[in-house]
Length: 438
Image 1 (cartoon, helix red, strand yellow):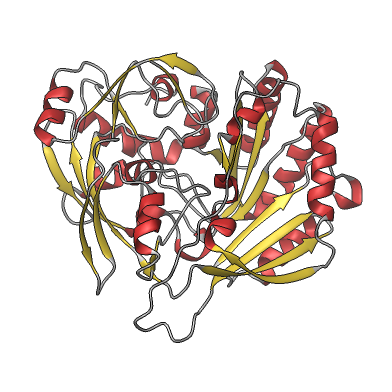
Image 2: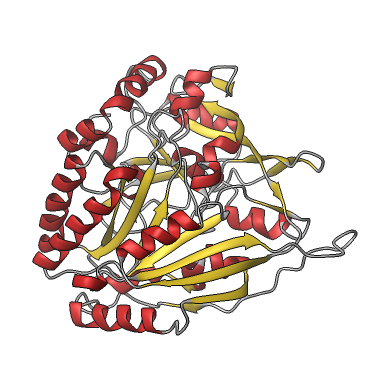
């Protein structure tokens, strides 16, 4: 079958297998010369692509929940959407969530996903208590911070290269309502936006949208969205109802030139202008705050049949603003702009070997794939290297081996050491891991 990541680039022919029984999965792995696990294929590039793939689709069982502590045990193919459907009505929520619910637990661990609260609590991996992992030699181990801790630290953020995650124990957090108290702050430029991030640093959730077509005194103007879980009164003995929200579907790939600079400039202008006040407070439903794009099925099709790539980088906090200004200059030089541009603040990095975030700001931008875009990305790379940043492996589809090793150099050696111990024959590999010599 033909498969791709969410960016629809690259596309490859692959054999996909799935099974629900551990003994059968062990046999699949033992007979495979090369294999890579994947879930819902929501990683944007090629980190979950290979000629032979194991899908976690049939590993979809809920196993155990401790109502006192919030500890949930599930198989790796269970999605965040399924967890939200079951546990929000019971007063529990994910401690960290990315911008979509269509992610499996296995994928969230392998990508060590981050959310709008990284500056407060860190990554998803901080809330993973244990992983049941099928190693390349077909042995099954339970790893955590005390047992097989090195494998544990290599697997969280390890993009599927240490084995197949079968089960995991994760912590949920208590909530009293599916509502979020949202504050929207309108910033006139990048300086004001950074000032607002600093001013509201104690807010639990924060994320900004930026207009990539702004320049001069308005360069980096945007909207900062702050959020707190609404504290419902009289919560005792009451369930929390989840309302159904309407969706639209993109039925086919748009023509490749739909998202041209003229359209993007108009969209950016209208999106920024829709907020009339400098500050607006509102109560919004959790999915509107955390997963706005989930309301559009197959939204990736708007970029056309050639697909798109997301360029997401993090730069240390002292260099963040300077790097973003340089990135803006390059976009203007190439006559490009991003349809969706998201800025978040990260806290300290963790001890997981290939985890992406560190203390700084991360900017994510989406661009339709073409030769001009790829040339622009090469120019971006030089800025990120200059300012001590790095790219998110889960979003990557094209960075070079040389660039990767320079930007992850303090993390790669330890990961490779563990990888060589558990997978000396390099059985678990993807298109990305081959390109990056992992």
